Length: 325
Image (cartoon, rainbow, N blue to C red; front, top):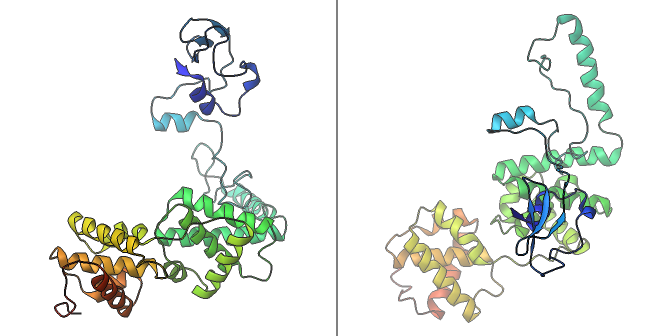
């Protein structure tokens, strides 16, 4: 037996009006469970049957491995925001093979070629779909270069679609708004990516991405929290090949700096870089300011300035005279 709430989540979209109102028994007030083997809605305590012969909306076949499940399914790929038509249109494969994997006869190849060409043309109906086609492909390219996960890409595509629906694209470059949408999705999922890293893979400069990001975040009311030095710590530590002990020390330094107000008005990447530099000195795992600055996408001057502020205001046991570049 499974709980009725979990069963509803698994079978969302089914005819839920057949289920009685509420998830508790009308007799004893305990939870109702769904018996999948017998198709019954039963109280877990008193055993009262609230509904029987319930229709199973799942598939009528069984699959015992992933390959079998893929072969027996009769539905297409799930809907996705990464395609301009959300993946609902028909796709004609460019391979010259039929459904059984056999080669298409030479007499039919010209006809199949014309079908492919017209199919690719009619999939894009108007200017809005052409805009989405180009923007989403550009967004997928940038996300691939940054090695971002699928759910974050879907979120970025949804933000861009909302911007198109609110007519925020007019007067702005498609690449700039797409890059800004990707940066906003990274902020929402707390994935540590800076504007400099987004600008490196985008075809626009950092200023345009920043302007587009501020505009769409205000107009779409994204309500994004500012990034913190702690968000970048794990990634920078990993790229610098430092130990867990060094990471713990850097984390405690960042927390002390936040409690003293030393992070206010400072860039989070600069503070994180300075904390890592200080922790590498304390843990005897020295890394140069240049290597830390390269990983954190800041200048060496920023690392030195933030490091000096930490040493002067926190009791780290480090002397500025003894530290070298």
